[in-house]
Length: 128
Ligand code: HEM
Image (cartoon, rainbow, N blue to C red; front, side):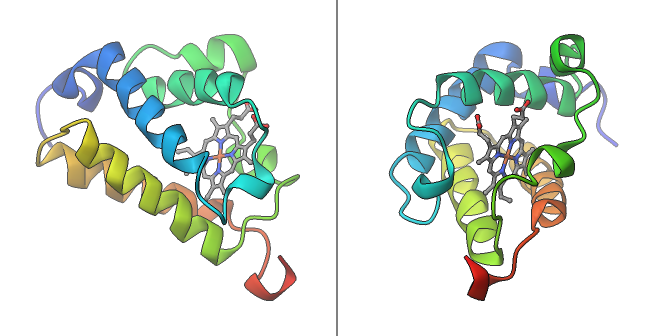
């Protein structure tokens, strides 16, 4: 384990906000993802910033406003296929690069998000 939190090491709130912006700019133009996201991603991005802040060891902003994340349950309304899981991770991989998150953090972050994304799948590809 590295000392401190991932949150602090990558640059705290400012860097999380940059990452979330870079991520949703890609989601907004991704043909696989557009159909299941709202047109206005402002509120989605705000919640994701809160979530990733606590996920990477910062203050528990998401919990304070929304309670326990129950992320898999909160995604039940949206058909998340393997294809969409891969698309989400592809957007995140490019966003991590775009905002200049360096190793070893980039790999650690991507691995944790990959595990979480795998848990969100709830629909086979043929049923999308
Ligand atoms: C919300 C899609 C993975 C965290 C949402 C929403 C969609 C979505 C459509 C609702 C947006 C809205 O109504 O505002 C997906 C897809 C994923 C995925 C396709 C692919 C696997 C993840 C992962 C995380 C995550 C890996 C966390 C690391 C969140 C959070 C919210 C959210 C925090 C807001 C929940 C709330 O309403 O409080 N996601 N998601 N998602 N997603 Fe995901």
